[in-house]
Image (tube, rainbow, N blue to C red; front, side, top):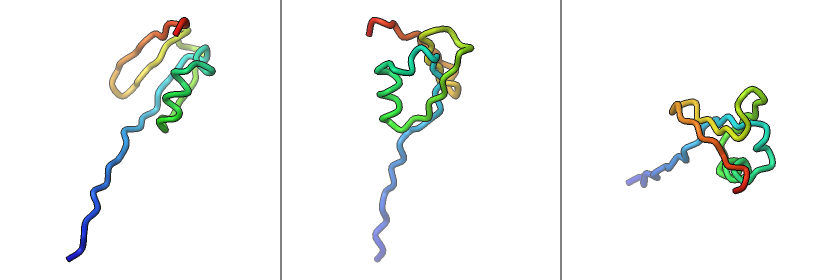
Length: 63
């Protein structure tokens, strides 16, 4: 009898971040989790946008 392996796929998505967060811990953490990051000058400074869910956050620079 063939043994079937359960495959677990990690949740990965493209996340849009303001360019002010390029060296921030947020971008480093998301990148280490294999998310695709896109940096944009056209979003408000500190913005983190999850396009598929329509959710956005503002990162406090004091983190």
